[in-house]
Length: 205
Image (cartoon, rainbow, N blue to C red):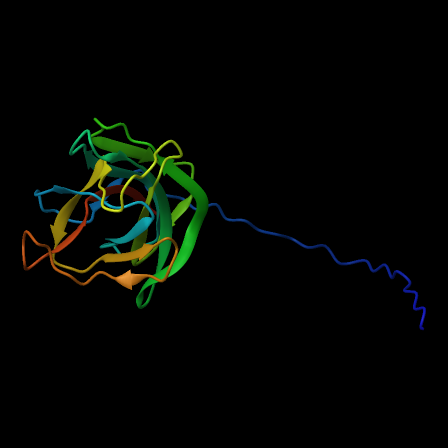
């Protein structure tokens, strides 16, 4: 059996200078949304499902996400009350990357009569990349809710709209993501996507 003892060695390093450049943003706020179409309709999403929807960046410049607005509708008093978890994913050259860019959970608890829900993100430092950002919305079952059957609907429902591009990925209970490719049942030429409005400020050049 070997008994090995190590001796400490102290070395003096030269001075290390760390420079930190604070990013500067324009004061003008840019409004971006998933679609400019005015038609919206409620979609009930079962507990455990998550939808990641792309907010595209038309300016192709780095910025910061400062606000998100969702729209809800209470379809019926007989549906199960739901909460939502809001997360943000990066966009790489090929699209959805599944890479979180903000790790704090943002839980939304809308009342049944909530129509517009605005989330202030000014102090969160969430980067808005050159290609945009994926906004993830997961349906969360509140602890006080007990499901009595397998066929159910949730409320308040997130309002959806129609878009020409396929901007949405879905998954169930943290399983693998799948690209949503089916067209809307209301408009065969378009895709149904969550209606999400955002406010962004871009970096000064």
